Image (cartoon, rainbow, N blue to C red; front, side):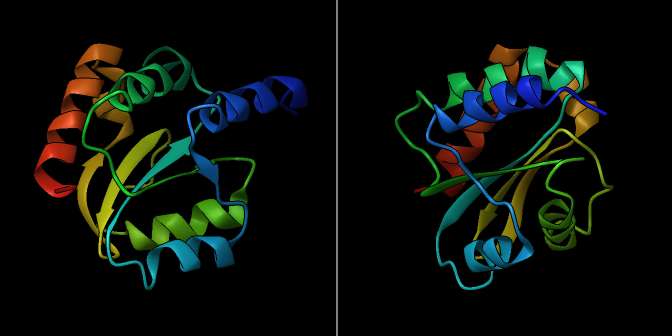
Length: 138
């Protein structure tokens, strides 16, 4: 059993950045089925690479001038059904957490998988994300 206080802190870290949680499959579908724009979805995790690289990298990237229209997250191992629904939308990629998907008009246009996060740093991850924002969010 994971510490609920620690998990809540991990959630709050993203909420403080303006990232809204999707807690149900219905919320996930509402964001992706009919949205005609860009959405960043972070599959959050309790692992060390989420804490050391992914969340700090996302925070750095969100200071960029060009951003996705919507910022959303699900929490792997916690929001099980919502996470599974997101994974249905990114089925061309192996299931991994943490991971970051950028959607445009409901389709994945850019993906950062766990392996990419493990071999990265917050600043490198932010640079990768902002490059994707520049390409897809204009």
